[in-house]
Image (cartoon, rainbow, N blue to C red; front, side, top):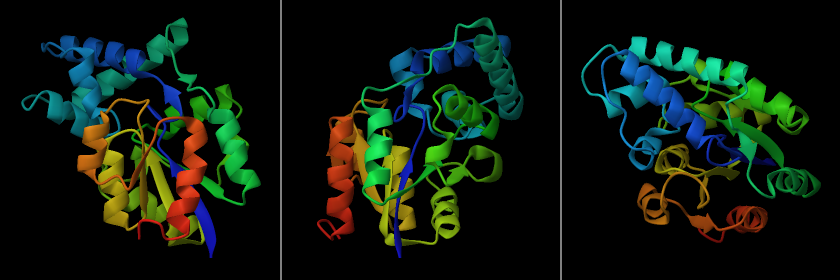
Length: 221
């Protein structure tokens, strides 16, 4: 069966942390709460918005907070203040995977609207055969997004890797029975990725394909 690489978005493909924190701060203040410092707040990146709000603020109307966050993020984009730049080497990495015969997918806590914006902005849409977002799935670490991507691609879970920057991604990968490759340029520390179940850690974009091939060949299975 075909081999599949599934990428997280925020913190893995693009660095959007400052914009996410700005939108979180705006949303929480609107509802009467203070937003934690960025280093703390970014630990919820990757979760569904409602789950992220619940984690940051146990009390309150989390659904309403999530909607306010969406509005704040859109306003940042429309004003030109949003920063969602690719990490170094990511576009070349996507091409390298394709040249090596891998299919590519995305599994993200973003909405489809948000993911569409990223793909269009960076001309990445043609790289991915499956797009899984928070719109149609429970929050990470539930394996639903990975399971759907594997099914759509017709891939073998043992020939599939999840590539992400958070422990939520690593736990989701473990729950789905696929390879868990953590990238250390995102929002969780290496120790958090290891605790989440990462099979291997990538320090540079150029490391990711090598580690993915090692998983496929049974290095950590």
